[in-house]
Image 1 (cartoon, helix red, strand yellow):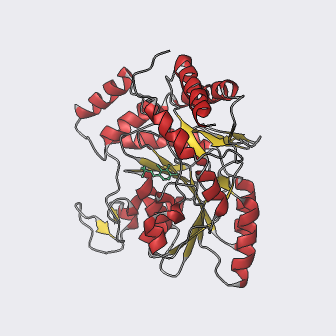
Image 2: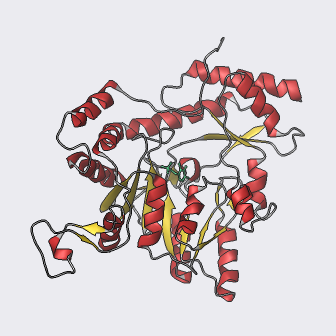
Image 3: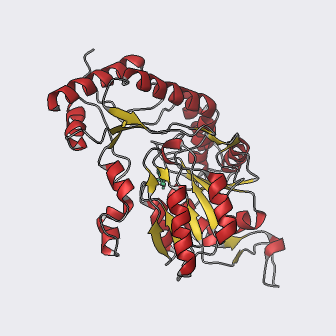
Length: 392
Ligand SMILES: *Cc1c(COP(=O)(O)O)cnc(C)c1O
């Protein structure tokens, strides 16, 4: 098959129905802070099996106010894993807290429970227990939440699940976002993620106090709810700023797109799982491995990551560049956060988290999105095979 069109690693799928729903909002009186963002929140809370859902204008802002709502401040510590997008770590620094990492289990790309336990034991001795841990459900596969939850009780830390990749997945039969084993879960609706709102995010929690705090923080720290007022002079126009918050609200235009997309989430997850299975059978003879998905997890399969086998004497950038030349948009998820120049400038060193570094020197993500055809997958497989031959 000849392929002259670039196949990206991911992209948004916008239906005619989506466009109709966005148009409806554009013709309505409220294009922000209207009923649609509320409806999107309530539908997402249903899908995630959580009591409360709070929409935001990105997952990054969701992470920021989640940290604030859990009381993260100067002198506190947040841990996440290096195999993530920088936002999972940056949120600590926004709050003047410090950041540290727990390395991954290379077979899954997820935070290593064994290393987490080890690091907690050491941190306890040094009186440096983190206030918050952010497990990242990398590639749509939930981390071992029961174990992390058990450790949170033993050592006393809060948990924010970064489920930017994992909408529609499940862990131990509970939907990701149910917060059964965490305080808060956050989602991203950037166009490459499971569903999109253009830019956008969502926070789920079962804790009413947290939900109220988050609601205020995303809107300047202001409340219009009379029952919450602190002052005594109350007029019909009164609103109160009680905290220093932000404008992190999602518009109803964005929410309409998300709400419409959310209707398809089950099919999206099914199709992504099928596409991954196709890759697994097509690529079975190549010198690569796929990430493992634990038995108690249904992955949303946000990414189709392959790892070159360690004994291959080629740098993965060689294959990477050849694939890009074949018009295939392979991508690396992720450059370990602690190796970014900014993180090096605040004291992190290469070699500190060897599993993440080894992983990122051998991993790349193949194109995967609803609508990717079997013949495109065959083309990708053939190009991989040809490119491997060229360099081996
Ligand atoms: C995309 C992503 C984010 C940030 O999401 P935005 O909505 O773009 O702010 C955070 N964490 C992870 C793991 C992501 O993939």
